Image (cartoon, rainbow over all chains, first blue to last red):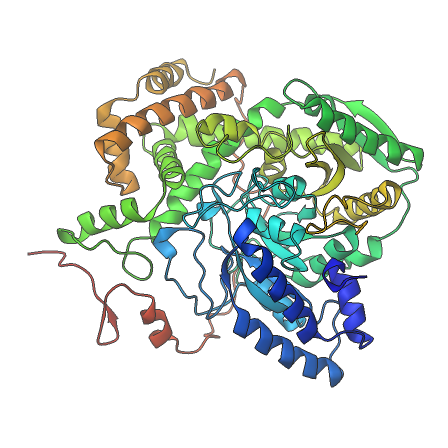
Length: 491
Length: 109
């Protein structure tokens, strides 16, 4: 097997068995980056020297007896996760020159486990977008077809995994930003239960919705990465103490008796027929292996998007107040006084989508409209959570599509923001309810673009998702193999 | 409908975002928008709010606003310094720095 086709888990095993060194793996992936980065632009920053130095250091430690399930494996980090000494831009002009003095807890967890950080991946500016086109540093292209978007906002992370420009990546998911790009790029992505991965060092967008999670080649990688990054952290007051984060224990090929619900509303109008067929075929494969699959009505689906955009914009307008041109980030050159400096720095530093959401958020939080918009959305959020509670009284796992279509062409989405927001219909309510959601490839459409399957679990039920996903992955067999440049198990 | 007056006012807002509203929100958001950006913001906010008004179809009378999905309360920890002095590195990120301090524009005359 060619080195770059290895999963993170298999590469770590090969390093342990001395079949390959961490340095060789890092050199291989760096030369892949050099070869294909012009075409896809997955990264904002590649830390070539830092990665090689780290690889040499880890290799020595491994030879001296250091053990870790992913020790020595090169990883890419989304550019909204702080990395000490390495620029962290959120793909925004306002943070173009920002170098953090500390690392996100999830990044530290990886480093303590012996990870080699390759660089920082491109994203929609401040994670606001579904295509990676709102990046201030240029678009990322979908490795399956460079005329198409990789999805977003973790588009750089998903594309980097697909283009074999890393062995796995971290992303963040506020309304689908891990699952949807994973779906568009034919890789596996997981948004964990809210509070499972510390948000310390993640530049906040919608704090009550944000979670960090993996983008990777298969379900076994997903479980292994989750075991490393999940941790209780006093530096994140919403961090949850869990004693069930031994996720790899759930890698079992067994769904006998697993109750799987298919929400009718997830298969109705607006869903591309090819996506529908592939997702239903995946449900059939699970039924064939003993799962109890049935349709049900999950109510309130159409209210998730307006609820989400109210809450996310409100939180964003508050979180992004910190970018004022004083402590870090961009400051305008010409200004008259403090307030003029704030306003000009922010207006010149933020892109249009970020400004749009800050404006909306400021409005729904303003006095006179706070109750009617913001509190109303929080009330509907409670109803949405209740609808999921009722569903999970009957089902272990909810199964559906990740997105209504496969990856759109570049430039098709940004002209109509509302239309772009509608693409988040199947992913967004999971964030509102704090639930875990897993995205994995389940087929290809007639254009040769990957189709994603979404598995949703009740809070803290990642293991059920992993078990179901692992079983389906075995049933599905090899995926992809269309071209030599993109990751596919057939290659 | 929770409150018909609120609903009426919302209806009016969503359909016609006035120039004054955009000015006011611009102040809250600390953004200086160009005339073109203001026009665009009026259009975008109008269509988003029209869409958000869909939530009025739901009766939420008596439903508690849910800010957090888990019943977590304040989380306390000991007030102990765990990080070292990073002043120099932190100031490196500042657009204006002098004598170990952030430089800000004159705030009063």
